[in-house]
Length: 397
Image (tube, rainbow, N blue to C red):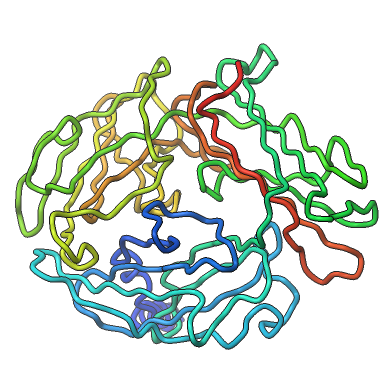
């Protein structure tokens, strides 16, 4: 019996290569034309570009699927014919091989909309990528809007003494400028997203005030966190204020200067967690090389929980692949293979509710997006009827 179970387990791992492929998926980007910064919110007329690299030789074909979801990213109970014009489960035919790089890779890309698929309705969408054996390689989430501009977001420092040193208070107000009438019989949900990181989203059902002409959600608290850290590996052989040393062994190796847990707030301009592929060559998708980046962190205290490194480069993912290794004392390190470019990153520790920054300050510059969903009694899915966005760079004390 034991031998049979072992045989089944071995067979499972052989026929499901996703476990090894996941470590080879790099540089996932979701962006609109002409915008180097990735985003999660797009308008229906936007051309959305999705791209990723597979390290090593091309060994599989890849396909994508699109699923409409409710406000909490559960699949909507509607058919694909209602939200897609065309069909998905489409093979990605646009791919190019790396050129003059020590780390070989294949860059795959596709656009939405395309000749096979167009998005028909607004809402939350999950894009999933599969290999030819239908193992899921990765997924990304996007939000599609109609031309909504009826949301007003205000950001202030928390007025409560206990958390005023590290919290930011959000107010979201939606008006009926688009001839929307707020109905008492409808189900309204609010999502507030910080720095395009859906893992730190908050959802609310009950507004503080609702009339036929406006809805107000108030006293929404977020910990300010800390500013993102930064390095630029465009010139892959060069050191800088962020890069301590570069050497070569099979591929490039980039060693960053030590980062320190911040005891006080320090103004450090950032791009709120995103990253931009960049290199001194024309076809950056294929000629930007990969480097093994060593991150080093020194903390002020001994954390009982694990510490991770996150940013848009890894989808803000808390997983074993991005966990810092604890060394002697309160010293942590991690090695990540990253493509040349400009990177924002930060360190977080795991909590029961997700994760939290090592340091939190009310002054930290953050971007907040507020999205209002409505489901009428006669509706079968949540529609987006309000959108507002605000940066806390001019936060009111």
